[in-house]
Length: 440
Image (tube, rainbow, N blue to C red):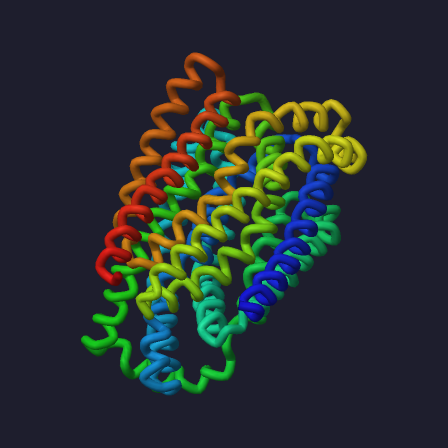
């Protein structure tokens, strides 16, 4: 338990540093570019790549780690060959996916941001199509993180993210005077590549030749199918949860110029700070929970889940209160200047109330989802989250008619988050009772 707490603490510190850098980065970007159409376009352009990157990074370990552990128990050699085979196959699949997204990018962006006009959509497309091709590298980095987690090396992935964030900010500061908004595209791509460079387990590169010869075998295809069977429900479920970025930016696009920037800044502030204190719990809880469930120690697993949820909820509430009462002072102090005026800052602060309840959902949702995943009931969670997406979009669309886009945005986020959380809790309580009764 002491090791678990130490790892959680280290991860929390690293994520805290990353979040601090990202918030500083948002301030720097706002002052460099202002709440103007070009920054609106970049924030819109990064929506799909960021959402997919977050989904890959947030779900692959959950699906892949339990399977990798089984192969590693058979022998280190067998585990390494399996890791390399699956990484290579999935890398090829994601190259194809990137090409498909490139071909249909204008169609997707027009659906999301068409309210701003075709000129805005085309500017956004020019920026986005380059970032799409980072997806295979994100995938390989996530495989590398899962491998490190299997060896109980939890800190290196967080360190890589920290270095990537520093590089991202440095590139924007250095190159924005020369290439403008394109410095942000360059920074995004460079950060992904440096993270992969740090994370990837080079000690198993020697297995590539052996694994390459096995890619066409039926056994390998079966292993890929097994991973996809476990991962696809998580992808769908996580895309549903990450639908919040679609709601935010799609409804913000219906507001005047600059509101995509404003809402992005507020979301980064709330989601970043509430995420600092819960990411350590999430990262360390899941592998520990898998071990308890595999050993059929359901009573202890239930106690661990209850503690994680309780502390996650309390910490999230405290962080939200700190943001609401303290952040406005620092926003006025730090953001005002350059191309971001005092009026821009006041508009941004006025948006805080719309994100208080959604922020609570962001802070605790994964702590409610992980027990369901650990039980192997991903399909139930997927169903709940798909329902949450449909319900949130319908409710937000009606709210937009009667209350305006800002209120619609907030209501949609609340419905999306808490429908998923409530549904996950119902599933967990039902499954837990069954398991405890069977193993009395």
